[in-house]
Amino acid sequence: MRNFWWYEDIHKAFDMGILYRANKIFTIYYPIACIFILLFGWIRTIAPLICLIYLPLSAAAAWMLIYSSLQSYREKYGTPFVVFKIYNRHGMRYDSSLIDFLAAGFLLYTAYSQIKMMLILLKYTRFVDFIRLL
Image (spheres, rainbow, N blue to C red):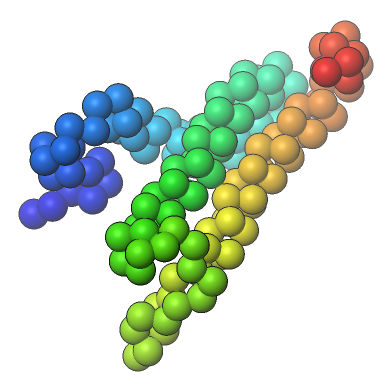
């Protein structure tokens, strides 16, 4: 049975190197970070820590989504960008670079909302003044 979560078969064939290990770490820590946001994101002292953990994970998720879809489209269709292509009419499955970019934008927007939430929770501290200077 193939394991598509961690690309073990592809790693054995092509030796993905550090990307293989980074993907393993990412698939474990991203759901954990999402659960921590839901459970503890409203607590004032924990919000900066969760934000610092979630921001790189969200950026990595957006990058991995775009990179994997562009590679997949290049393999399937010979071009990395596909506007809209239906490949199973009965199940209505489609490929679209536009949808992938929207999904990546949503991931980046959730990272932005984490920053805004952290700034709201830390409204009365000097850390906000430092962030505003950036």
